[in-house]
Length: 215
Ligand code: E4P
Image 1 (cartoon, rainbow, N blue to C red):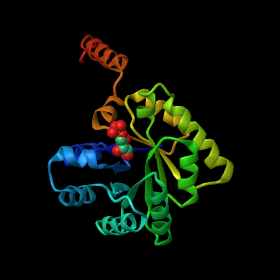
Image 2 (cartoon, rainbow, N blue to C red):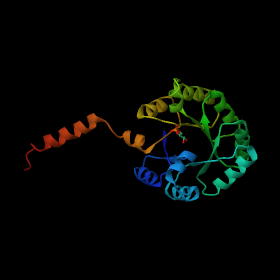
Image 3 (cartoon, helix red, strand yellow):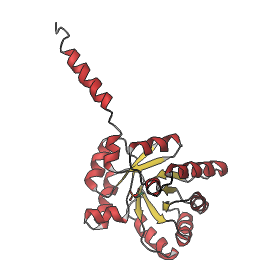
Image 4 (cartoon, rainbow, N blue to C red):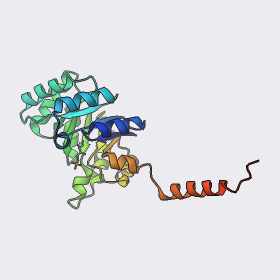
């Protein structure tokens, strides 16, 4: 299973990349806005650090403009994946970009039929936002399971990125559901390493070692 970091903060990207467990990066306009830095600068720096898919999002709402924006974003680096919102115009743009060999990640996905349309248009990735569904009383991971079933039924090659991840249990459920990727904030990535029993176990071993004769 692949793990992506969901951020535009270059320090977080550098640090997480140094751990050797992340495979790519997803950004969005809100993440870039939080950096208070020019997007072009942020994108260039991420592309210098990470050798894996890096999703950069379009902001246009009309297909031809989205495609043009996508072409511009794709020029940053060969690893760039153009993030396109799940709309009718967006799916037209996905089809155009796919025909030009430019990979896309269809974002703000909230239904299995939207995911089916994205796959039909040739999206490389689909991003169901599980945490935002949970917040409205749905079971976000059910969406992932339904997409997985549809993609398996018809042999769609589109990879599922579980997004809007809120805690490690989402990552566990994503892995059990057979999702290809989970993308998450730096803090959640870090939490994946932790277990209080691990800390207690290490502490006990170090304590016991003190009573082992040294010669
Ligand atoms: C994924 O690609 C998105 O950037 C991200 O997961 C959005 O989710 P959130 O803003 O609800 O955390």
